[in-house]
Amino acid sequence: MAQLFWGLMPVERATAWFYYAPHTRTSQILYDLKYHHQPDIGTVLGEAFASEIKDSGFFDGIDAIIPVPLAKERERQRGYNQSLMIARGVSQATGISVMTDVLRRLHFSESQTQLDRWERLKNVEQQFQALHPEALQGKHILLIDDVVTTGATLIACAQALQPKTNNIRFSVLSLGFTKT
Image (cartoon, rainbow, N blue to C red; front, side, top):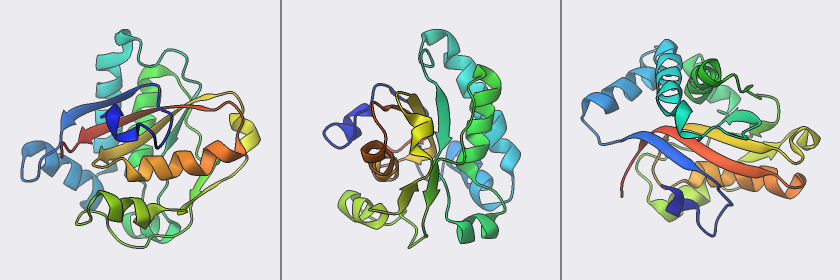
C-alpha cells in the first residue's frame, strides 16, 4: 500500500487490515458502516485493528490522528463520518488523540467508486483545506480512511496540510486496501 504514495506524498508507514474486494463479507461490513447507519462498526473495527498491531511499533512516535473529513452535506446525509468513527476506535486502543479541527473538506463532487486512479486524483484535487496548521508543526500525523484504492484522498489531504506546516510527517491507516 505504501507504494501508492511514492513520489506523491511523504509517508513513513502505511497499513490496512485486509484486502478489500466487492461482494465479500468484509465489503458488506464496510457498506453497513457507510450506508446503513451503523457508526459503531467503525469504532469497534478501529479499536480491534489498532489493538492487533499496537505491539508492532506502528504507532510509535505518532502525535495525532486525523480522519479524512467528509464534506458537510455528505456528513449530514450520512449522519456521521465513518473515518472519524474508525479513528475514535484507534484512539481508544492507542491513547493517541484525534484532531478534527485541522482539516476540512470543502465540498463533495462525486463518489470515487467508479473512477480510475487519475480521475480519482483529479476528483479530490484541492478538495481539502488546512485549518490551524500551527497545531501540526513538527508532528507525525496518522491519516485514517476507511478504504484505500488509489490513495488519492489521502494524498489530497497531505497536499493540503504539508505546504502550510513545517516538518510534518505522515503515516496512513485504513481498514481496507483494494489491490489494483
